[in-house]
Image (tube, each protein chain N blue to C red):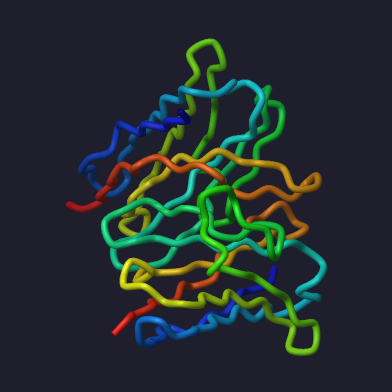
Length: 122
Length: 111
């Protein structure tokens, strides 16, 4: 059974940093692109970033470029999101999701974790 | 970059059929595949349609997807509505600048 379990969320002050983790199990983690998708309270879904199987390619939504870094450790079956210079508008539930290729480079998200809440507030 | 526009909400009665639209702002809707996700209150999203009209295993055939080039939109149709279908539905597609785009979501109420 595919499982994605996020952790690391919490309350942080504007300008602060936080590192999210996603523990994957039930599939060969190193064979899949992985993404972070967020959802602000009462709002819709927003793709944040994704990373190739070997970490050699990474893409980000414009609003987080230069502030967020996605990474992975295939030996630990784990995905990470380092978030720096956090802003109030980064407040959201952050989901880890597995990417499934339709036709390169089109992917969709077939499994999602339960999410971890990040609140940026003073 | 393009945007995907969905109606904010739709409602229909149990047993009826409802269609949710997703209109692409620029570029052809047929250029990239469209997916649909269901998010029930308090839960994570799940895929109900991928590749415009494919259903993952376990998704009932009451759910169907289509695209219409004349209106540059995709549609999710749910027939034989059940109260358990009440949820938020999001369309999603790929932008060629390595961006994965979601629609704003549609709240489906099954009265």
